View 1 (spheres, helix red, strand yellow):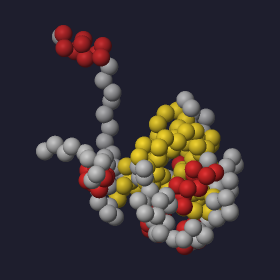
View 2 (tube, rainbow, N blue to C red):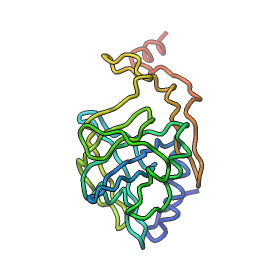
View 3 (cartoon, rainbow, N blue to C red):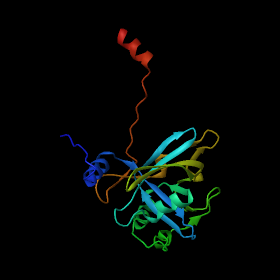
View 4 (cartoon, one colour):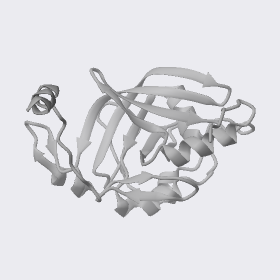
Length: 212
């Protein structure tokens, strides 16, 4: 069946994208408001976009009536944010930060999370996460009345020492991090330990093999 996406029915677009583009990594974003309140919230319209310069992209969706949530407003107002990746051990705390807390209430406090100072930006990192990216807003693209895409430039990557296999070669133990991803529908997540590997084929070998 073909679904022609109509701007008048954004809920259909959301359901189809969210239920088919899976699994999605989760950007557990920490920001700091101009008043100094630290906010945290998960965003799953997120991914890495390139390495020269190192960039990540986050889709910020606004409620038609209430507008952007605190985290999104802070990114657009201050230009600074931290992307923390979510291990299964902190999944429940991440879920708590989904709540619609007032702007002057920190979701970090509600979830019982500890903050760790960043080196290049004002928002802190979340203590206990295996990976965190300190970012600044490189570019923002308004793609709809309630939707903005933020391209963040990554200034520093923090990887917990336990997962660093070879610092000089930047080799990390990804499976050991136990990261979780977002799946379809409300409340569905996935673990990332079920893996398989395939070698990338070389065209020359394919042609040679076909001629034997």
